[in-house]
Amino acid sequence: MKSRTIITKAAAEDDSSLVRDMLSRIRQVNSMTEDLKKKSIIFQVDGIILGRVMPSVLTKLLATSTFRMDNNTLTLSPEKAGNTCSSRTDAVREVMEDLRKKGDIPGWRDELYPIASHFYDDPVFLMERAAVPVLGVLEYGVHLNGLVRKDDDDEDTMMWIARRSATKSKYPGMLDHIVAGGQPYGLSLMDNVIKECIEEAGIPEDITRAGIKPGGAISYTQYVSKYDYISRVVLFCYDLRLPDTFQPKPVDGEVDEFFLWDMDRVKESFCLHYDDPIKPNCYIVIIDYLLRNGHISPDTPGYLDILRELRSGDCQ
Image (cartoon, rainbow, N blue to C red; front, top):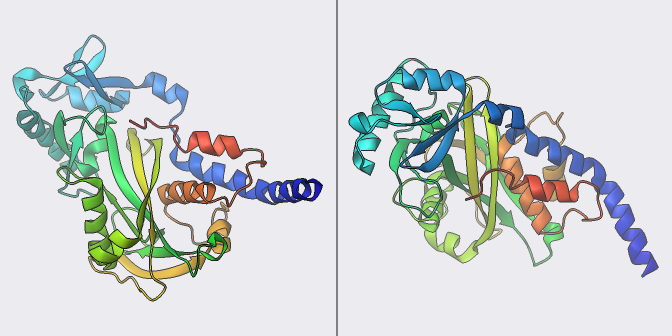
């Protein structure tokens, strides 16, 4: 037992620097402070709290006839937006399209997200994906850790890494997960996973179904200072074990190339000075994977901070 204790302490000491880097990566995206939250205004519809907006955004929204204040909270005007999902969707879209024309919403996708207080609730309305942070409403996505193992020993696991297209509106040319995507209206999580695997990496459905395993979810709240927006995100995490003979390929133009990293290389990339980093929110999903699979000793100071901060957003 004594030798096991010595090994554990040594592992914890080795992990200390990595844990500090992991926490820094988490806090890059989980950047909504309590002071900022206190300044924000609740957005609700029919008594259902849906989001939060900052004062500068509130001013823009109240300049339209679609939004109004009610008991110190922002809401939709029933005279303009009506009281159905369809009528609210139309009214909100009109406002967001105007903000887009003014340059306040980058990366328009023409993809509708369901807006609700909880993931499993019926949507109160639908909203353009790129506009979701304007109202600080919850958005959801799926992220996949693409893995190659020669056996069941996780020590030899390799992870597929993608390089985003240089033409992407957000994070062009950065490293990314093999497959990741927002969760649109009208698709189940698994249907979305299968769709994204085919579209982004040319992974056939049978290979996806054979190798996929749910890994839980992470959440964060990010303050987007450039636009004064609040981004509230829940990402469903999946581990996809791929045959070592399979080579993913770019299909839809969102990725330029794919390549394999061993776990040591993955861990090295957490350093804040790493010269070719992975997209910020992907790091959180990878951190969750590393903890779930025993790559970090729980004896390491900061381990519980990581566990807590991986889900410090509204995971609902």
